[in-house]
Amino acid sequence: IYGRVGAGAVPCRDGEWCLMRLISDGAFVKVWINGHTVAEGFDLPQNDAGKIGFQNHSQHTIEYLAPRIRQVRCERNGR
Image (cartoon, rainbow, N blue to C red; front, side):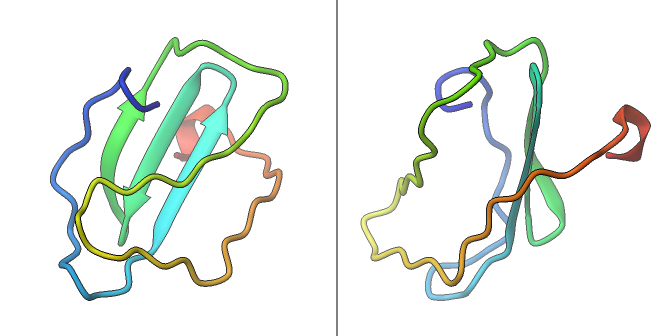
């Protein structure tokens, strides 16, 4: 969703571990950091396949602990 949806304030400080959750359902994408919604986009371009990239906008080191990618079923009203 980079370049298509602005991000809100991220409830995490440098040097702390954060939990990120992302749901991509067709043209809808929503991102949470530590349980707080930081980005939500509707009517986004859809891809059937592609790459997933992790990006950092900080000058500090970023580390990932056990990233998981899985298909989930979700209902529009259950987000």
